[in-house]
Length: 110
Length: 114
Image (cartoon, rainbow over all chains, first blue to last red; front, top):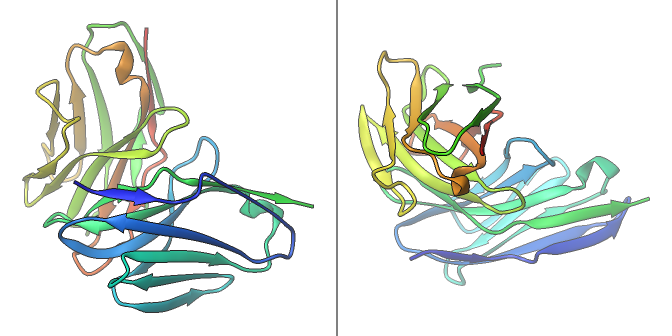
């Protein structure tokens, strides 16, 4: 089977930096993705790591260590609009399906 | 910008009825998926579809469920004899190719079973 662990809640203030960790156990691993979901909305893609290392996209960065089965999402210069749920998801299998973690609810305070 | 579209946005049905949820994936994408999300819970994989056939399915995707891509554009999820626990948001998603992890999700179809 597959399992992912990420914190259920994180709180930070505007302008701060937050790191959301994700550990996983899976077979047929291709990569680790991160998605953002606002209440009632669809998940939206943030980043994808297929190889070890850091990927940077604007204020968001994502890291993967395949040997440690570990990754994280780093959000910098937090804004109120960043309040949302963040899901890590492993990409696996011949169909490249995503298996999602339970999500981290990020609350950004003024 | 191309997008995945889903209809209906919300459907209310009686227990035991059949429902069909429709999706139009992005046209040049190769992989298609259905996911569901029960309120307040994580997004769960149901089924993937590639090369006009099911490629993977989860334990949730039992005989009650079926998928079709009848005309090369629409991608449907049929739920036979709905149960109360089928109430959820159902998301369709598509993937351009195997070298990317960027799934494009539709806005979802909220199914309420009474």
